[in-house]
Image 1 (cartoon, rainbow, N blue to C red):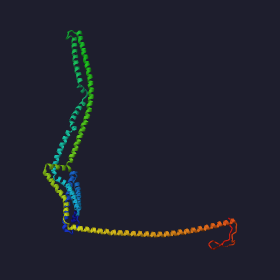
Image 2 (image 1 turned 90 degrees about the vertical axis):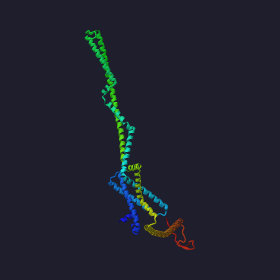
Image 3 (image 1 turned 45 degrees about the vertical axis):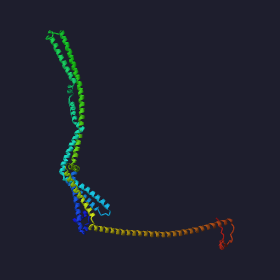
Image 4 (image 1 turned 180 degrees about the horizontal axis):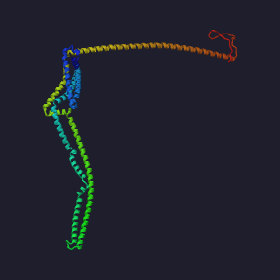
Amino acid sequence: MIGRLLAAIAGARHDVLRETPADRPRYTATAIVLLTTAAVAAVSATFALTMAVRLPLGLAIPAGIGWGLVILNLDRMLILGMTRDTSPWRNGIGITARLLLAVLLGIVISTPLVLRIFEREINAELEVLQSERVAAFEEQLQQNPRYAAIPELERELARQQAVADQSPDGQAAEDPGVMAAKEKVAATKEVYLEAEKSAQCEIDGNCGTNQPGIGESARQKMAARDRALADYEAAQAELVEAQARARDASTAESRSAAFEAERLRADIEDRRADRKREQDQFADRTEEDGGLLGRIEAKSSLADRRPGIGTASLLLTLLFMALEVLPVLMKVLQLLAPPTVYEQLISRMEREAKANAARKAAYEQTIIDDRDQRRVDLEFHQAELQYAAGQRTNERLVNEQEAIAADAIARWAATARGQSRQAVDTWAAATRQPQWPPHGGYHHNGNNGREPTLPLRREWR
């Protein structure tokens, strides 16, 4: 059973190999090499699926086995498609194409295995590359004018928000006009109080003239007091007006600051959202760097930094490529060598099969030709019978037409004689002359003969 399976994999006939024991090891070795290549391809595909798409091992193993069967079928097709050809150019082109395809398959199969073998070194190199990418990305974000302006916008937002949060009275109290008005009120008040004190002191007689009562000096000081009071009241009115103006301006400024703060807050949030989106996208790309392509890049970078690892990786790749190319090389060497007994038997069987097929085809063609000839004969005989039947029909038709014509002529003649006889009788009756011989007899008919003459009868019409 195993021998039959190995022979089928190698593309050989087990029944013929039993007659050529010397050729059996060659095809057994070819089958084992094909199975080995397929097994390596299955393992490589399993590693690739776990690294590239991060499939669970339970799913990656069946998929890898399927890929191994595909490679087995391709290698088997490459070997079976290589046969001895009388044209060296055609054979050389076919062998070159199959070798190139085998090299391509070897590269595809060897890459995941090499990555798996140097997994630790590649993981370390991936971390280094990711750190470099993160540092470069952060520097790029810091140099981006859109994101670099965020701290300044935040400070401006805090200032505008502080202005918006202040009460109108508090802002009005700090207004320069209000403060100047307050100073004027304080100064006029002090002048008024001093004038009031001086006038009262004069009235009481405690100062000035030192005479109690309202005299000229007291009246002057009272007038000065009244002027100071008017100035004080005017300063108070100016303070109230300045406070109203400052309160209105503060309210407008607070509203403007609140609107500006809202605009700055939306702008800052948009910039932060854009920066967060770019950071998330970079994080996703960085996470994908651990896949197959990222590991290939890390392997290339590692080979540049450590030439020894690059040499070892190249040797392993060449090893797996040689393993894939080996079945094709074995077949090429087999074609270059003299034909084996197995190949001679197969060639003889093919020639016999072709001869049998040719004889069978010729026999079938003879049967077909004979059947066609008989069909032609039958159709020809049918045509002859139809022709004879047509002739008989035509003869009968002509005879019938002749009889019908003779009968028609006879009827026409009888009718014509009757009509002529009637015409004569009519003419005779019209002339009323007797006919001789009155009682019958004979007369000449113009044909040198005689025919009886009937008695003339008179008919009245």
